[in-house]
Amino acid sequence: MTLQRPTGEAADVNDPARRFGTGRAVAVLVLVALAALIPLWGPSAALHGTGEAAAPGVGGIALLRGVLFAALCVPLGELFVLRIARHLPGAPPERPCSWAPLAAAAGFVAALALASVVSTGNLVPHSVGQIDVGGLYDSRDGKLALLEVNAFLLAALCARSRRPAARTWPPAAVVVAEALRAHPPTEHSPLAGSGLTLVHLTCAAWWVGGLLHTLRTLRVWHDGAAGAALLGRYARVAAVLLAAITATGVCSSLRRMPAATILDQLTTTAYGRALLAKVLLVAVVALLALWARIRLGRAADPLAACVPARAEVVALGAVVAVSGLLTALPLPIRWS
Image 1 (cartoon, one colour):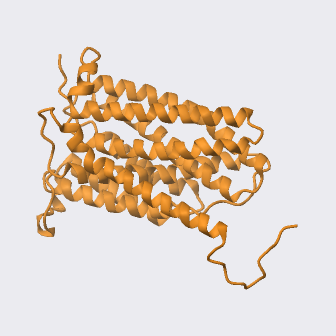
Image 2 (cartoon, rainbow, N blue to C red):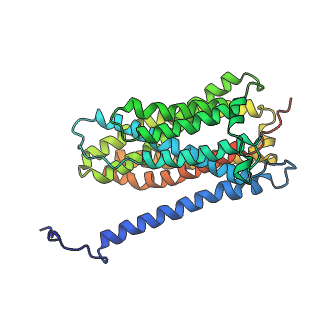
Image 3 (tube, rainbow, N blue to C red):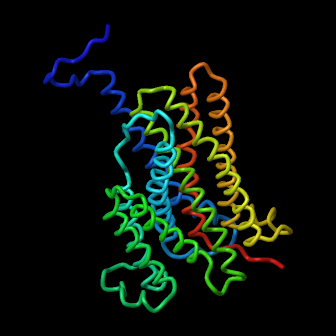
């Protein structure tokens, strides 16, 4: 027989479920704080002994880019999983509360701070008077920075919309802006590089944000069969996403560092070291995903796959943080 708390009775502060929820919240805050240390402390470790000079405020810029990438993953992942759940037979109607408004607010703050850096010629402004908003319209990077600010603002306004298209276009515009920003016209074949980044960033956002929202959905569903089916469908699509991320990541790396020099630059340049750290983290994520897939198919309780899946989310958070660091470090020299 199940005992229920009488209606109107105050919640017991010693209730195990309540303590579990508090512990989970504290654990999330600790993990977020640790993830923030990667871009803040990472530049000094990556640049040590390379002889390279980083841009001013590289740690803060890396942190802002990590926040911006995370703010992209949340809404795109939610829409991705909602689409999967919508076509799942017998799926419960319950859905977790959306984190898209919070993500849009965080992305807006990060994009605004990055735009202020662009407005001062990629120098960290020390006062409001140094920020030249009008100057943003005079450069390609400035216009892209403004596009990202406006897109996150629009995303915040559309976050509660019931129309998927209204919620999709703003973060999609940020993805396009990031792909163009990463490959200026002075680069060799910039459109090809932007295309690779576009696919890489989109697939990564679906993978990271999709897994996060899948696990959050399973927490509000009380139907184990439906939860296992949702996790299974996500896992099948995630395998394709991982293949696309790997292929575009390898091609982008070879564009930055030719095959003849990549092994040397992976250990002697800051960009190469950060890239190597990201590759190792992705390998760990892939192993955790494989473990979850095996549990999903062979365990007596398919939802036992949630244990490695939660660890995968944590590892993916570290990947996002390292990705922010990677975009802030000086690009490697393309040896001929």
